[in-house]
Image 1 (tube, rainbow, N blue to C red):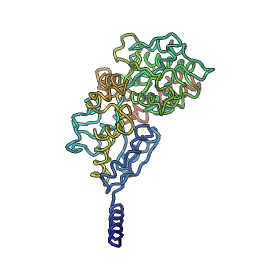
Image 2 (tube, rainbow, N blue to C red; image 1 turned 45 degrees about the horizontal axis):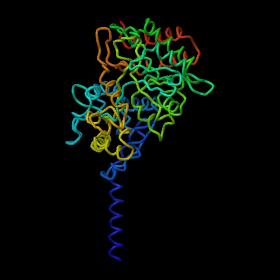
Image 3 (cartoon, rainbow, N blue to C red; image 1 turned 90 degrees about the vertical axis):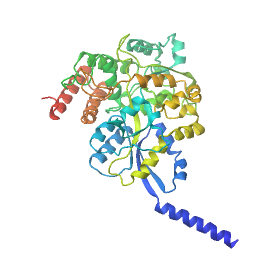
Image 4 (cartoon, one colour; image 1 turned 180 degrees about the horizontal axis):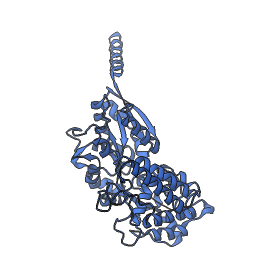
Length: 437
């Protein structure tokens, strides 16, 4: 008995010693559902890596962007792993702010990453962030409300169709609104949606000479349409609603339609999280015209994990990133939550998996939208990016303009006033930055 007690005590002492020597990774992440789920599954990682402990800093999207940008630009060193997106990666890699992820282990299979996502997270062919989930845009809608109104959703709807459908399915007395769209100000919130809506009407953020285009015909059509749509058929307080707020509204039965990130599909079809799980249909993102060249208001994004160059725990951080973005993690989620809840949009093997195809009715639509998104620059578009312009100045500029457009949605100014204000703000900032000579 004494021997057993001594052995147990020794084991406990060893465990405590290992814990005391453990490195603690501080991970900054966004408060989206897939990231919250990951935090609940990290025992799988820490059991395999008892010398690594995890400290989570979970933030709202706009706050996360502000915090990690400030920290990495000032070399603050608060975080060992950062959750960042396709906007930041090439810019920060060029500045030498990120650690390259050229070797995430023999079994990681980097070639399995979807080419559009992998390319967006690389600089000069080297991966600088690993995608946790990837997304484009789709139309989510309530099939029951459409059936009741006698409306049929086409595979590729136009915005005129969407407006007409919204008018027919809105029932404000019952607390059901025809459409929910992002209104919360932020370069990655309302501007993510509005940048693509304007592009749908033939407008970009800047012309070939970097002159802002907010007073162009395309932006005018987009903003007038958006403000009118939200005023008549959107929920109250739409100017405060971002992705998470609209996800909650749609899942509680308050929205007839929602055009947003494809990643939302798994949440609104999950009976544990959605009251309308069996009533959701999917279509392509709308077009401005019948044959719009952009194949709908698509975008390309991936919430990804990266290591700031200032981290003193890069080896441990690489181990965590390799785990969180691996095929093994996908299988772990599938075993715990079902295949439909595996983080989407990152690996070819997921979309080749018959179990995923069967469990996720949105899989085909998601993959098609990601593959159709082309963020490259062109003769009339001097920047990479769809819902954003991949230049360092866009983060501040986009947020400032987003606040102006949010004011138009809330009725504080007209659409014309908002467009004039956006043009003046953007012209001032682009001139100050030296783009406009």
